[in-house]
Length: 170
Image 1: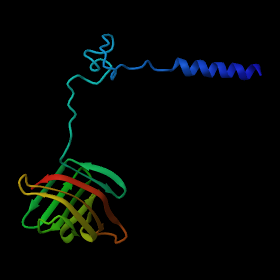
Image 2: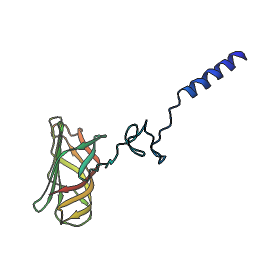
Image 3: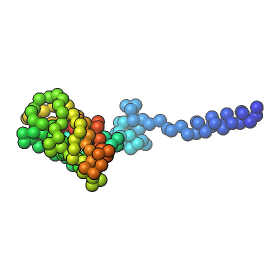
Image 4: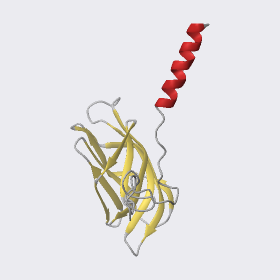
């Protein structure tokens, strides 16, 4: 019984000794030892902080791994060709022509992939849903999926899912 009380006492002391001191970042009171202005600076978020937002991006799951891409381009000649790449992957997909919002199959012509220096030039399945065509800012937004077969092994596939692209300029 004495052991149980000792363990309970030790646990209680440990619990209360590890409590963090409450921050004053949202109390509306200037705390000089913690803040440089009311509820900002010091241990609080910076004063005059303006969060940045990224409106233009491409992200995709490549064979199950979520990847963001900073190197991408879009052309409209008259078909939509979206290209994106990084150090290990390069993808080009043909969304076809037309400025209609909605879904359509990805075309095999000019659609291809390359992963770790292996070419995937046969598109066996692909679908794009275009959410927005901004002809004033020349931007395209939507989602797509695609599946390619390797040029070397028909059982080796490049599967691109959960792809989002936003405000890509052409």
